[in-house]
Length: 194
Length: 170
Picture (tube, rainbow over the protein chains, first blue to last red):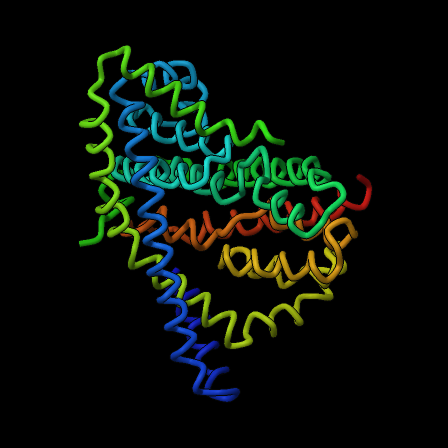
């Protein structure tokens, strides 16, 4: 990430220097602005879902659901950490249902726990599945198509589903194929930031 | 598609009623959950800010356009219409940026045209990879952030290739 950040930053900066230097700071500020507003709206979303998840957890319902999905998630993430698997399973279901914003807090929690126990494979798998759009219904796209006056707004449902299924399967397989065979001691695999 | 709107309220209703039956103190419990929201956003914020500043630079400096122009022939060879290559390129960096491009494409070419449909499938089947990696791996210095990010990018890209192909036959 450090490499990508440095390369894109320096190239963009150089381009601004030659095209129009005035735009550089305003571009960065617009990015900062976006971060500020996005964080606020994310905070709102997290409030709702984290409250909901706590109720789900205390009621014992998440425990019940987890019991059914455990064998599948355990194999998928190669982990025995019950709590992490509960978070990861919840993340995947929230993704499939397309609950806006709900997968993120669960995904962050699961990733943290996976990495704390040195299971980079599980963290990578969860990230790739999330980053390949595991959504059954592309609600945003259908809404945009409706707004643009489409005669068949849901027309793209099947190709989108197949394409995203393909990318998720491919991503998952690539993570599986590139996994490290040897187990590394946990403290080396991950170091938390100070 | 109206039943989709029912998912969330039905989910909340079912879970909250179940919790009441189990004698969970809803108010105390809900607020306990909300307590975690602020620390979570604080831990994510620096990475989110850096990533969004970077994507703003990437788009507004014209670097995105240069790379798009450079890659368009390759995209065309893979069956991705050159008109949607900015969308394919911006999507990993910025959700709002790609939404704006999608709306423009739909307005310019029509939502039911081949290009419009390809754009929709490309948008719907890929994700904001860099944003997700910034958020999920926030503060965790893993050795190989490169590998999962590269895999996600490649899988998304090939998903778009397949999607465009499907748009032609479906």
